[in-house]
Length: 141
DNA sequence: GCCAACGTTGGC
DNA sequence: GCCAACGTTGGC
Image 1 (cartoon, rainbow, N blue to C red):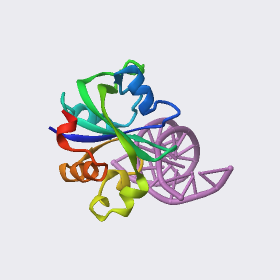
Image 2 (cartoon, chains in turn cyan, orange, green):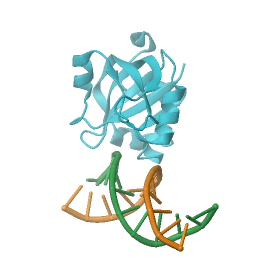
Image 3 (cartoon, protein in one colour):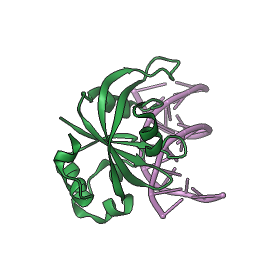
Image 4 (cartoon, rainbow, N blue to C red):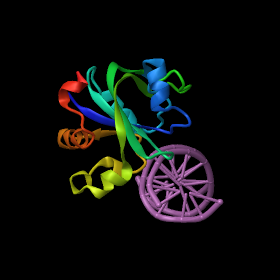
C-alpha cells in the first residue's frame, strides 16, 4: 500500500471533472520520473489530487483501480498512464501554503521537486495531511 | 506576465 | 558524452 500525489491544472482536468466522470485515465504525463512512479502504483494505492497553477491545493483523494498501461495519447508508445477513481473530497482543501508552513511537510516532493507531476508521499506525510483535513483512515475504504 | 528550476535536444 | 540552447512547468 503506497501513497502518491498527482497534479493537474484544473482548467485542463479538475477534481470536479473526475467526480463527473467517475473515473479517469491519468494520461498525458511526459516525464520519466513521473512515469516510473506510475509504473510502481498498485491497485488500491491512494493518491492526493492536487490542482497546480490555479488553486495550488490538494482538493481530493483518489484510488488506483487500474495499473499502468500504454498512454493512448502518446504516439511514441513510450509513456504510460493509470486508472483512478475519486474516493473523497478534501474540503476545505489543503493549500500549498499550508504544506510549506508545516515543518512536518517541508520535505515533501511538492515543495522540493516543484515540477514533478506524479510523486510519492510518505505514510507519515499522508497521515499528517489527512489529519489536517479532518479525514480518518476508515473514510478511505 | 515573469522567471527559476529543470528536462530535452542536438551540435560537436 | 558534454554542454549550450531551448522548451515547459508551475509558483509568485
